[in-house]
Length: 314
Length: 288
Image (cartoon, rainbow over all chains, first blue to last red; front, side):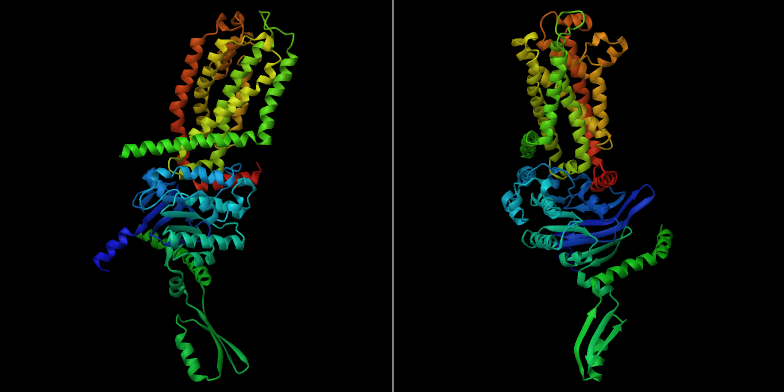
């Protein structure tokens, strides 16, 4: 990488985390996580429950103090982020029963008011409330009380409040938990819109692989407090998947062959050269789901070695 | 430049807070449950006062009801200012309202302004409703220029003396269920603060306990604003002790205003999404 390229890369980073560690008592929840996100990028933090996703996002939001490590979010340390910084960051919280008596439009309008003084020449703040309601598909429910909304509608209120200040960076913790497939799909479209048209950086946590695959430009796999994989969904599958399945029909017979080697091309080339009757050829590489499960399993089975290594290092 | 910016962000947050307080008042005054509770007190007071008819304040020929109604006004101010914020803040912390305020620029300022305004307005509404029981004893009261001057002053001083300390108490409790203790403590203090019966009829040591808390002094203040001349004979020291009243309430205000920001900030710092998730799970499993 040339010098000019690396400079651009640095200024383009919306968040940069190095060797983040969080310890509660003797329990080390994050054991040196290192990752970054460029502006406009959608990054998914993927991992099984208890992997440290929520802790990571809370540190980045400035709601939790890390034990050690360097954290930089939009050029500031979140623990010292002032109100000006806060206005540039969107936090999508999970509502439970807060503001249940409020009407949707009132609630959004109330939160919007705080952002007006933080408008800049480039970023008009806040978002127009009616426009935003339309964007998240709540126009018809604008006058409804929050307590009367369905789970999916309520979640969209959370998202709307999180982005009403037109943030440069949005944090979403388990955004689609409890969504039906339709609500999930609409939510995915919203996230794409944010990153494509608003150039908003999005960091979301999920334990749902399909969701990470659909939404994210890049996936970080977090397990037991460390990032065990980092890359685009395709790259992740390519790098980590070791298996592929080749199916074909020859004559009247259907054949299946599992290729243990990374690249099934060689097998297919040989197959086609040797058997001219091959039709309905199908090559299926292990998808991200297989990859993810394999990864988690590998980490679990290799846990003992991992611990020894860590202890030897420290 | 920067100063202008800061002033305007604060101004915006204060205005948003006032808007919040007004909205919450509106929601509360249109909620059937809230209206039920708001009406329950004046109606039960009316019944109480009707039963007191014919009784006099010991040592005087004044109707007992004429002493109790002004005391109820003082009590309502103290109760609205102490128990209201204490319970609401504990609830808001548990359900994520406070975390939302924290995630918004200047959101905590807006939240606090909104709460003060909301408690001011709803307490005022509950005072207006005391006009219902007041009809039964109006003939025995002295409503004049002194009342018109003293009552609003006592209301404002009472709110300043109680809302900050109530908010601080609400931040100390671990859960909304624990904050119900505030309600219980308030009831006990009301019983020994000369609201329903003159404090001079209590044992001396209890009189001293009662005189530590704002309930007694707010009741004394409102009695002094509404009772006829000579009624002070039933009070400690045969006097309305107006200077002492404002002094004690002033001390409570100072304690509250110093303590509340410290306690609230400490509590807000600890508030995270996972803390709320934990509280939610706890409530879900035990069912309240």
